[in-house]
Length: 64
Image 1 (spheres, rainbow, N blue to C red):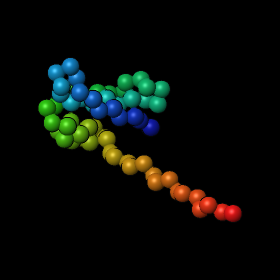
Image 2: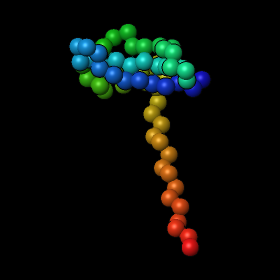
Image 3: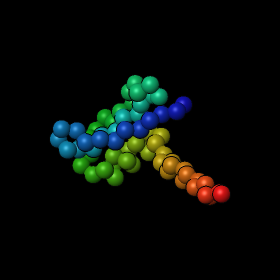
Image 4: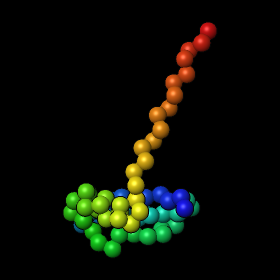
């Protein structure tokens, strides 16, 4: 299943996460709020989050 993960700070400046479907419906969210981003990230990883960096774009050579 393709998911979009959202990390944000709530009104108390604590970190939370949400997992969204492609149509942006909330599928799951953190049950706790975290003072440190790293703890929020660790909890998301326990729930299936994994980071996939964007692929570098190939630069086309300037042909004449």
